[in-house]
Image (cartoon, rainbow, N blue to C red; front, top):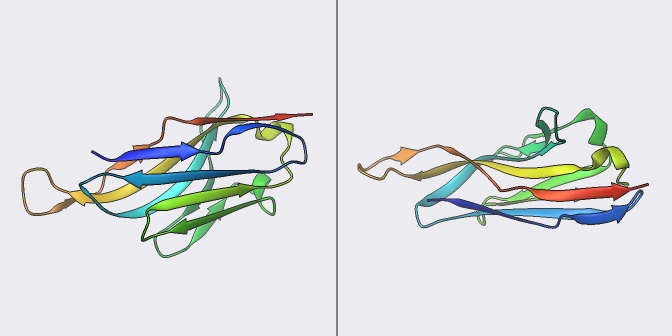
Length: 126
């Protein structure tokens, strides 16, 4: 089993900053492929905020470009999201997502399932 542990959420005022961190771990984990952060407001679709491939290619939601910066450590299977100049519209539950390469449970091989973190609340007050 692989777990994604998230941290860094909280309450900040508009214009403030938060840093979210996510670490994938587990005895069967070999490495991570794509890792990213998504967010969801109740009643709305979950949307991609930032994603980084294992090769370093990065994708950002248009509304966070220039304000959020994602980074990752392939060796540690972690991804961080530095969020600056936060706005009330950034308020959401943020979820870490990781496609992981893990040992197959029964054969000599690999699987590449996707795991989600439990979500961390980010609240930005005006």
